[in-house]
Image (cartoon, rainbow, N blue to C red; front, side, top):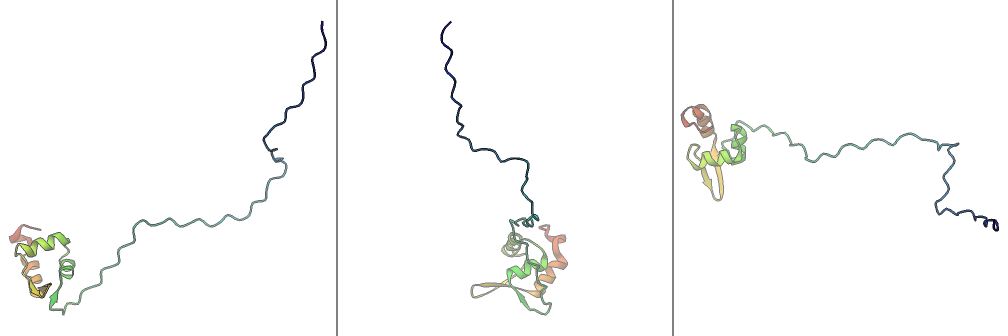
Length: 111
């Protein structure tokens, strides 16, 4: 039978030793949760328009009538709401807004 086989050398592991599970680390208080990030800023509340104002710009007029910007431009362009120009500015008379609100979609069919 031959000579006995040579003894194997112990293998050396390159992994670091695992910590012993006997002593768990102490847990402190949990950090406060972060607030969720809002993707869109909330819209500011529209301030009420004074009723004693004589002329309104396009934005104020559309806020009073509660129509979109494009609808307001369409109403002015088609002549359903009459406006005046002061230099480069377009203004709408308070009486014209009231007239349109009274007459409104019943005769125009555009709202």
